[in-house]
Amino acid sequence: MVPMLEIGRLTVRFGGVTALDAVGLLAGPGEVVGLIGPNGAGKSTLFDCVTRRRVPDDGVVRFDGQDVLAQPPHLVAGCGIARTFQHPTVFPGLSVRENVMTGAHRFGAAGFWRAAFARDGERRLRAHADRVLDLFGLLGLGDHPADGLPYGVLKRVEIARAVAAEPRLLLLDEPAGGLGPEEAMALAGLIGELHRATGMTVVVVEHHMEFVLGLCERIVCLDLGHKIADGPTYVVRRDPAVIAACLGAR
Amino acid sequence: MSAGLNTGLNTGTGPGTGTGHRRPAVGQYAGDRRPTWPYPRATLGTAVAGAVSVPFLVPPYPLHQVTLVLVYVVALLGLDLVAGHGGQISLGHGAFFGIGAYTAAILLSAGAPYPLTLPAAGLVAYGLGHAFGRPAVRLSGVYLAVVTFAVAVAVPPLIRRLAPGGAMGLPVRTPDAPFFTGLDDDQWVYLLVLAVAAAAFTLMRAVVRSNRGRALVALRADAGAAELLGMRPAAIRAHAFAWSAMYAGVAGCLFTWTTGFVAPESFTVTLSITLLAGIVIGGLGTVSGAVIGAVVVTFLPAPGLVSGLALILVLAVAPNGVTGLVRRAPAFIRRDRS
Image (tube, rainbow over all chains, first blue to last red; front, side):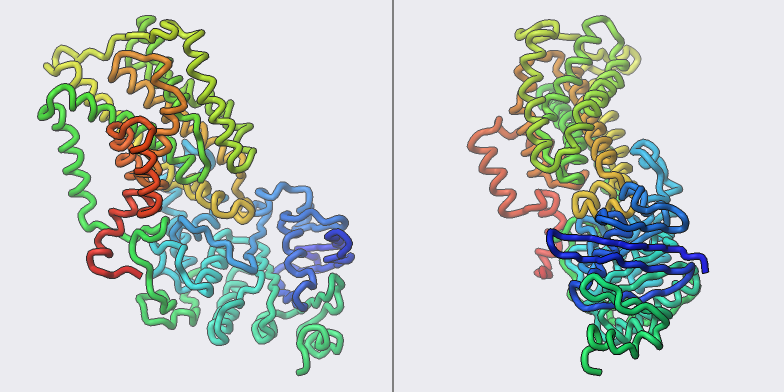
């Protein structure tokens, strides 16, 4: 397998605390990997490194042969990487549709003059955003301000924004957080279908175990900055160390 | 990709929302694109017809004031790009306004035809906007206000020393109405300013509705998340600032056309503060806020007790400005507030 995403010896220290200690992770093209672990295990920090929000103290992050850590943050999207955040970062002051359109920012016209006159491009972006909104059941909220929506809807809008970027690697940070059990499973189904339709690689951080078990072929478990398990879902879910760290008494 | 995937998420009662929450009243939040007024085209047509007929109905002095309103509309459209959409405070727009006004006045007194002064004023202000904006926007938040404040303070003394006319100011010829139109000069100037303001309005609407306008709002809300979508914060903010300065410069040129006289005292930091107060009272982040703000700038007394109290009152009663208040009115009347 040629890895699409290749993380090696990733090390991040916050003062005296080692948030990630030489963590390695490989994800092949089209793989869906679950990243689990208790709070503080370093899952979000790992995402931050892959998206260049944080520069690790040591390690490599390569995506599709490119050195991600050598890119400035605004070019990470151009590499084909999109992510969502644990707390949704939907932009207030824009409508729901406009939020999803910002996901496709890199497909839009560059420069103020060209952007002002790019009416065709704008129409295409809008149609693209509407298709994504439709997938997520949000079309009726398109003109709605992104402010003043419930948490679960904001999470969906944020995922829709990431999907609108047409990434080849989608990093989802607790997508099911704040959703009810039924909504969460519906979302897992939707992400699974998107994955099958587009062939993108997906890495999901999630505490909702049914969500992870239903969606992911492979699971990586972190605990206190160390990788304690990495393997097919059916193996990892029975791993005693994983059960002790994340699943509790089951 | 949209090949009929059944999301299963659409379980609510609303029309395809599935959220089941109570929707906020229209106008309560910025970024609301739900229609508020059912007759936009008819309203636009009436407004255009009204604006074009003003010079034939209004006596000269009020006409002069209405022309000034349009001049300030252009300046506030520009300021709103930085302050309303970008969420940054510029205290330097009075200076860019003055630079545009003086560029036009100097060219006119050198015998240049007046149509040439408009792009010249815009270009000079655009260039200076880039020169000041590029380093300044890298600084966060209040630092842009400090740097632009310095510009606002420095420009009037520089004009007094270097520009023709010095402290006495510089009288210039205002555009003459072409003979065949049979219009008075002030009517002609009004129509010129109206045409420029309408073009500026249309262009700014296209900009704020384009991906650059969305990027500005996104950067204001969460620069880190916006950057991950491929937006370059420094470049986008710098260009927005330069555009904003260009609008101020164009407005300055229109000011020269309208008044036929420029003096350093017209473009002090007081003007910058008045413009900022105008856009806040009119409504930040909306193009119609610029129109209401321009009326405020023209008719409100210079910064002092009255305008200060007006500003505080607006911020307390209607944080989205007069525009936000108007947008909320229908819901308010129906007692449909949430």
